[in-house]
Image (cartoon, rainbow, N blue to C red; front, side, top):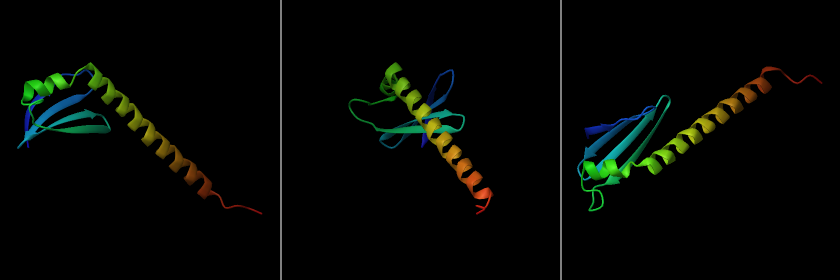
Length: 93
């Protein structure tokens, strides 16, 4: 897999990769990352077409998914803390 380019974004690092007949687009935000794998085809034959695919609607969906990922980890950490607090003190009858 080789890096074929980057897309500028104020919050994320966006990297474009190519390997054989597949493109990958990786979005990185501190603590999270998303990768989309896309087959090279007539619809997406080259890097320019791949860049056009990453439009404002696509970026909005990625942003929404990052928000969802943050909620999932926050919920899991809160549950872990709640479980730990419950386990700290024995029940006294």
